[in-house]
Length: 392
Ligand SMILES: [Cu+2]
Image 1 (tube, rainbow, N blue to C red):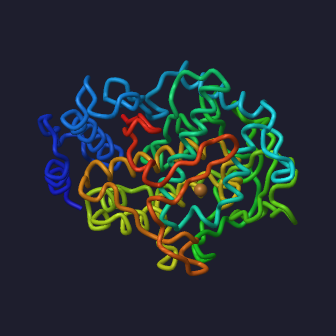
Image 2 (image 1 turned 180 degrees about the vertical axis):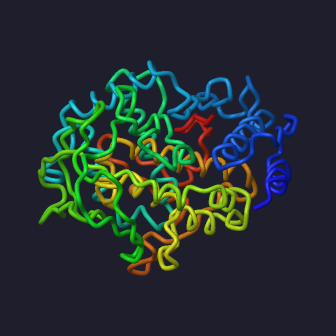
């Protein structure tokens, strides 16, 4: 792909009052993401102002009071430690789930895992995929803030850096300011993804995480359907108690193959960006074509517990990954204002079994004590009802 073309398209697609950014930095996916984000954020100024809000009183969300979600690599070590502390707090608070629903849930963290397991078949490959996960991630962020005193926002995992060596990424380097490192080496035959048709070779991990803040995490629920060879599926109720360690198998192969400039360009400004249907299918994967997509690729680049479609939130990086999914959706919405509020798809996974089209009045349910909102309510991160955040 020719870079001048990318930049020309970028400047055309994003209405902006800012001067076009320099082309100097756009040499790879990470630089492209940075440019796109900068342009998107500056294009919000004329729409949302920096002070007065056009919204109804009480719902005012402006650029001056919107919370900003940031790249894990660009927040300070102190901020990373505060986030980690809050996640560990959530993993220590008692569950609120009704034991008749999720008998294995032990912690507030598990409440979120249980919700995701329970709804997996109606929140993926569906009309609500993007908005459900947006609300789910926001609710988790809110729990960190309100129940664990966290004053920051949900950071995101930038998919496009360290793709050739995930172990060096500040997210996965195993230090005290990371989300823990790779799993211990465990000989196994890779992972299977997609419709059991996409083979991903094993990395150098596969066993329990042994370094960093989450090395002693106890995983309680699932996994009903792990993609990684050698991670046994739970027999019986996936919401029953099945305590074990957190396993990972960081996959440079998966990150390097799918987290590319071509794929990012394709869904944000290229051919697959022209409708919400194309955008979300390309992001989630066209499994029949052997195309993993960046959403599934993120789960499989982490591997282990993250490879289970149902119980992947057992992996604490799930929320950094889904903040990134949401950021790409946010970028797409800003660069496609005419289609930003469109939805597409049905209410069953890849329309199996066949079902009706999803509606903006369909509700999103994300678990214990969380109010029901509609898909329509979740389309705008700056509606003030309930969301008020942007990405940088
Ligand atoms: Cu999910």
